[in-house]
Image 1: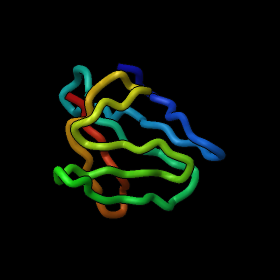
Image 2: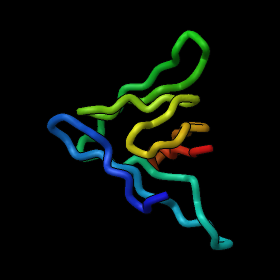
Image 3: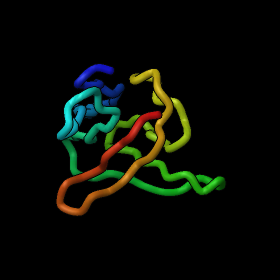
Length: 88
């Protein structure tokens, strides 16, 4: 996967930046980087978490993120750091 995945956003700049593992190798974990600090969150009926940065797109666990061409495995919020997205 690319080290930076630019997200299709309207009127804002959002992208995913790959986090490098301590032990080397390829990482499938990315940090969401946004121009605006506001991010909407919620759960769909099936219980999967979704997040929507200002300008989009919707990123939902269990669904394919078209910009990455991969299925989102999980989304985790880390206080004072931000959102971390793992892919299958």
